[in-house]
Image (cartoon, rainbow, N blue to C red; front, top):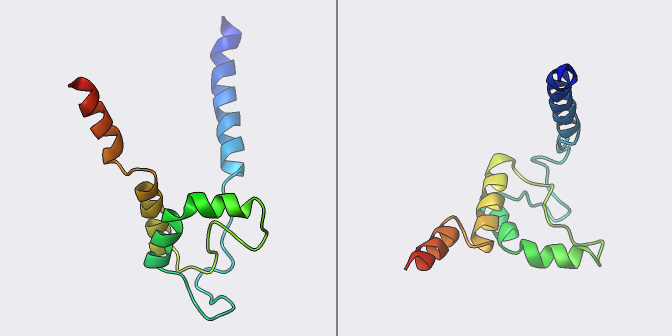
Length: 104
């Protein structure tokens, strides 16, 4: 039983270190313009989030298509992207609506 007491915290710390090691690094193109002189902001992030499923499928077969714009302005692009993903996949109310219909 004593081996289990010290093994769990060790495995927890090791797992946390592995997950932290997988975090994305800094974006070197943050705030810089792309080839046509654009820096993606909130609205472009929202659009990219909404079309994520289609762009992901196309990116599997075409190297020129990416699912995320690296030439962005940072937090506002990320916020728009996450909001667009939420809208794309039903938003926060989708699951509660389903639960409400099941209770009836």
